[in-house]
Length: 499
Ligand SMILES: Cc1cc2nc3c(=O)[nH]c(=O)nc-3n(C[C@H](O)[C@H](O)[C@H](O)COP(=O)(O)OP(=O)(O)OC[C@H]3O[C@@H](n4cnc5c(N)ncnc54)[C@H](O)[C@@H]3O)c2cc1C
Image (cartoon, rainbow, N blue to C red; front, side, top):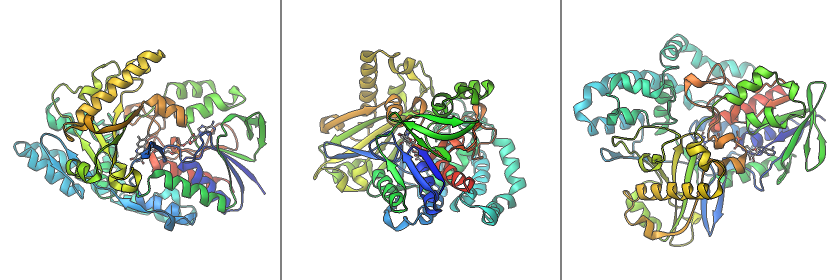
């Protein structure tokens, strides 16, 4: 029986492992952390549950197909998530892209003409991405793959035209075409998703954000635990607390891994974690990656990481709900002076928008009786303030505290008296995220989303091949914009490759 070793028990590693174990391979997953899940996981502190990464996901058809394929669909309570959009100009919980548009039109009646022209273009992109209610083609093989690609191919010419026009245009370039630079609407249209992401992504994510946003009732860790258990039932071996130190190669092919001073042989190795570390740090033979590629990988920018504040509140869920109205709130700060993402801007956290998410409002069992939990998040400019203090521990703690205070103060505009309700408080910087998952600079969704800074030629390709034979990428890093769908695409492509 052929032997597959997978590095990392995130959603990519667990799905790839399950698909291969189901096909009859001997699969072992090595996970550095003490629990499975990677970014799709969570943790308890003082009885309060918090998410470690993903709080919600889109592309549900792909997720449900994967769960069905590995025989685990009925084992998890997936739940649609409601997203509230809040600013000093608008406040609503749109259930669709159409409702989102109505909310924005009613908030800015004087800008109707400009909104008409901007939405005319976004509508075209949104209409092209309606196929998102079907699983990604990467989740199929053979004839089924061609059938899945067909709807995309049918709209081919129109899609190519739109991609040609908007694929390489950044969100701020798009916004500047219709709205005065620095105006509220300009800032709003730059605020969705990742900074400077492609206008194509703005259109497609707006069409999915309200109609296809999901979470897991028991928290993401319950999903990871079910995936891990299911993988074991399929015959897979999962080694927790087992960091892989080296990928062993022979004759330019991967033949095993080194973990805790022991070599484990493998016919195939799937690296389901960080791409940069896989090719620049884990290989036992540097010469296997050509120098030009090494330089390109080293220099490639990654997606922004998150700063997250975790709060345990002495406030009943009903009390929190009175203010939040929905478990997930995007609180936009559209005031003048919010100059976007600048790594040297010490005041960044006083100006940024805040994302609020309450796990216990989604499920009261995730906090102690009569209490509630709240996460405050912001995407941070990459390596903010000399990468959070330039290695100086005291400077790091000070920046972390100032950033947390700023987000709490921002959120207090929605939840009055918030600071007085805090019973537990902690925070994670992108360095914390990197420490627990190995993702470079705490990148939250693989590579940089700015189309001008792409690592892969196509933002839509799933790239699992490496310069090393029998070594594949099984994590979200196989796709430019990563995410849960990226991890699934990589997992299926790896499982399909190993025959
Ligand atoms: C705050 C936040 C919000 C997000 N929101 C969304 C969202 O709304 N929608 C969405 O689609 N995506 C979202 N994402 C991204 C999504 O969570 C990830 O893209 C996805 O979970 C990645 O899965 P993965 O399996 O590819 O990798 P990871 O989850 O990064 O898993 C990699 C695993 O490999 C392990 N590992 C690494 N190196 C080694 C080693 N040497 N030895 C052993 N183990 C190792 C790590 O410990 C980790 O468990 C979000 C991420 C964050 C941080």
